[in-house]
Image (cartoon, rainbow, N blue to C red):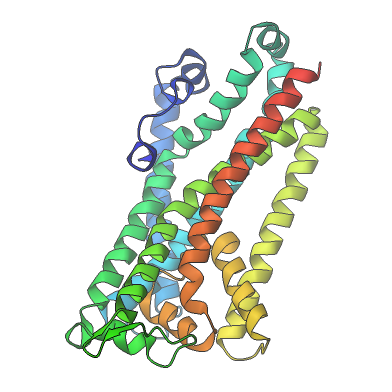
Length: 329
């Protein structure tokens, strides 16, 4: 899946690399069977949770609108999967160096030319391989929601997007001739930015969290302190997510008035950090934001920029971790 976005991977990120293969060493048959059993039970639970939340705990029927029902059914399961991915990412990385030290492998790796660098890079890449089933599930859900957006665009004889951008701030009107206005083309482009960001953010988010976890593992190696730091980091991460989510809900309910710039910042923070743009993969919700948040039509572009910045930060943090690992004993 990552190859689809990035093309050929570096040698250290290929499953055939010895260090990465060691990180992903095969598990016993019994453990694999238990893993698949857990997956099946998890799927059943997520389906049940999605149905309960989609029907307001059986108090409301599902909407006859297909895309509305799909969003109501899939949002909670997708959000739960993302939370599991974040927890797993920190768990796989924040104690990486301490684990290598306890196994008496770290000194050997540092004594080998480029050993510390390869160890950290392969540990970072291993996160994506180990979380591959969850990332695939998250991506498939998002693809379903993207398909729903494309379906909604055909509503009202294909003029639904025209209706959504009428009356927004700023007005997307770029008249070329009396009969030609590029405003709709710009709106389509901005929506395409949102769809792209919605598919990229889970991967760049995991990349950033994994790099941060590895950087922490360089400085905190004792198991007790590592576990404590991991708990604090997770509490901060989810505390921020909860605050952004609460602010988003209150604002959309009209119970949290705020200046235009603050409203845009709240929507941006919620999409980039809290749910990785998941809520905005619903055209009626995204269109409502366009209408009530000035310049909200540019949120897709802002979130795409956020995804690229997350990827850059992940690279910088991983490089920082590598340099510190090579310097420290």
